[in-house]
Image (cartoon, rainbow, N blue to C red; front, side):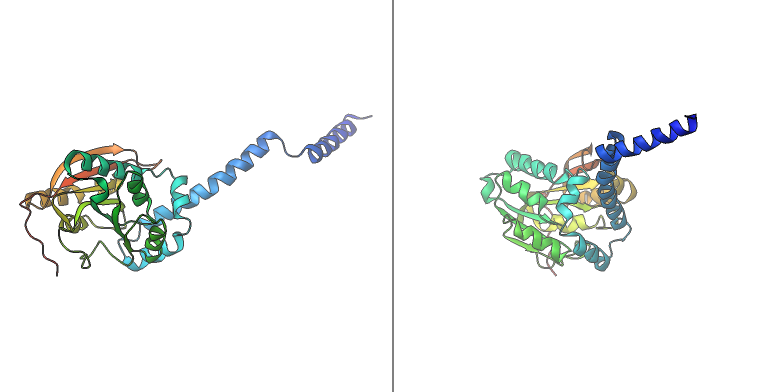
Length: 262
């Protein structure tokens, strides 16, 4: 028998064996890895696309309308731990500075999304939680968690929060909102307005947002005008698997200038 015939027989036997036992371990591993990587990459692309919307309320609302049903699962995929950290910071602030039981502390979750922060706050013992979001569909998902008294949609933090009275909350939390393409830094002024004197605002910013916007300039402006005081900034903390974030704690001074509703 020639070498060519031997090679042909060997190739045929190899193909037959593969049909019997299936693909080898390396092929299976690569296939499984591709199946896991593709959805993760799709989520990252969706997040990246949201950063290019320049705060356009209509386009952002459209984006999140189609995202609401899978948003929570997608955040697990990208390692989003911001809601847990913001909630735990709020808990630390309450324990250190605010008298009374947690179940009597009124909290506003600004940009509540599907309720990721609210669920963590409820786990820590907070009960009086309200929320709002630009997306009606995201706010509806938040309300379904059962931890919010109210969760309003179609509320844009790039404008005046006309449905919210000044000094109405002991704590205001805001996670995943001060990010590129979403809310401008001057939205912080409204968060200060709806928080009572000696109350606190706890907010996150993606590192890229803080570095490429005027957020820190706005913080300094609001401090100079007496609307808030920076108590603490935890820089470069865990936020997403691919990017760190900054976590800000502000106190509203007793002597903060009045900001009347329109």
